[in-house]
Amino acid sequence: GQQLNQSPQSMFIQEGEDVSMNCTSSSIFNTWLWYKQDPGEGPVLLIALYKAGELTSNGRLTAQFGITRKDSFLNISASIPSDVGIYFCAGGGISSGSARQLTFGSGTQLTVLP
Amino acid sequence: EPEVTQTPSHQVTQMGQEVILRCVPISNHLYFYWYRQILGQKVEFLVSFYNNEISEKSEIFDDQFSVERPDGSNFTLKIRSTKLEDSAMYFCASRHASGGKWTGELFFGEGSRLTVL
Image (cartoon, rainbow over all chains, first blue to last red; front, side, top):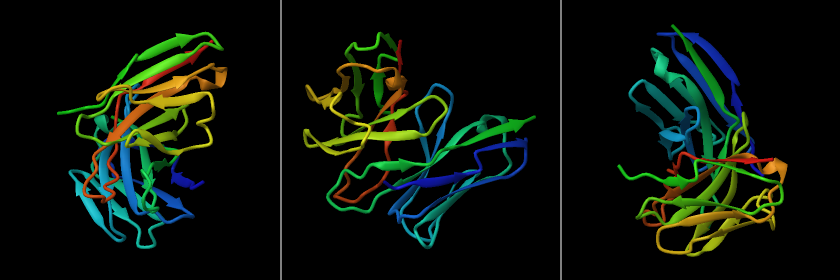
């Protein structure tokens, strides 16, 4: 099956610092999404990307859909304590006629230190 | 804001017992999913469901698993004979169909934690 490599696995940063994480795949995806998961809760969608090369922002979050369709990055600027959590990238397949499930990366655990 | 709801939030069961996890997807959504997350690991796809039938399933979704939409609102995951390794958080998700375009936006419930003893 399709595999996503997400890095880094974990990050410890100071409040106010910028953060960057990325995902790569050997397969092409039609859609890249970034989710955040807080402890004991389900993933919540942060940003969705639908076109190769697309750069999208959501507040302090910026994500890009790689031009090869095999990678994506997420940047968080000026981190705050509530940014703590696990961030997952997810790729949506390109097969037509299917229900198009998502493949998730292994997650980046973000810790923001005061 | 509409949301996906799941029950129970936590279930403890003995190995070999049957378990049913319930989900109420967002009302105008047409595609339904079950994912699972073993503690500390990534979210893994189990099965997708559309038009009252399974569309795709992963290798995890073996004969011990089944899904059903028994009425117009519920979507259930049944594990017939639980194993220790079935202990995980199970997430239901749903998405809206938008003229056939893949929007990719799955909305997840808060999960049901299954503990198999």
